[in-house]
Image (tube, rainbow, N blue to C red):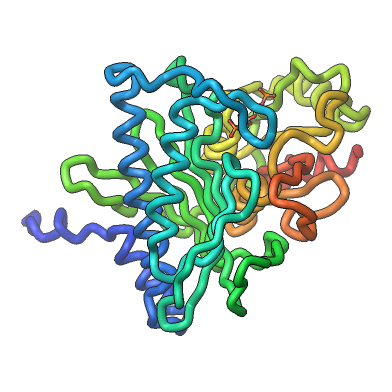
Length: 328
Ligand code: FBP
């Protein structure tokens, strides 16, 4: 059997993939690819900073709180600066919404071929894991902006997302990207410095034997959630919880199961943020054939009231989610 060396060079990079998808969707401008490639560069810079964090003493708190009243980690600030600076200068990006900034940020861009975008992001999801080298990630969500927003952009429901996904800084640095009708996975090839596609057309398993929830809050969950978690335990399902939504949902996407962040006494509307955590993760899971709800409807149907709005989260394999919803 002759092996052509060429085979190993026919990799599909992030840029190849997104230009291909844009061409297929009849939009040859490459404007979205231009934004996604900038996110790719940001993730490489953040990944490198994380891997050197303890060597360069950038772990620990930054000595200030963000708009959510959370103690900011030095790396939260560094990752946010990398994303804001790079995306603000990118043609086509006119609105930015970050977990670390109180209000929307605007950028003067005439757009690329008149294409304009709003980008929402959680620079470092799971930042509580930083000091212990646990899984953390960057979550992003991209919308097309039809009119020049000046400084009055109206937040849109998640179902209008053009693309969404996350970078996971774990044993390898990977990207999961959802566009219309497709979810693909890329791994950062440190030797080449590009994100190389390793999976495309990802489908979430219809059912999984894993439930992922912070059971420390069980006592204050609504009864339906308590009953469901009790049933999971009784069925011998495995509990897995990394304390980082990006890592927990990634496991559910590939292995099946369910991730929950229900309402609690401490967070009656849930803890996780709609615009830059729940909507993008919902788009990824839904494009892969899963379900994503709040307990009162679809996450991506929520009409956002403000940038840092929180919602309860039920996300995962269709059979697992339907089972929970049936008992709520
Ligand atoms: P940030 O780190 O971006 O603030 O994210 C919030 C988060 O860490 C999620 O990633 C995770 O799912 C959740 O909070 C964990 O919360 P808890 O410690 O209450 O279980």
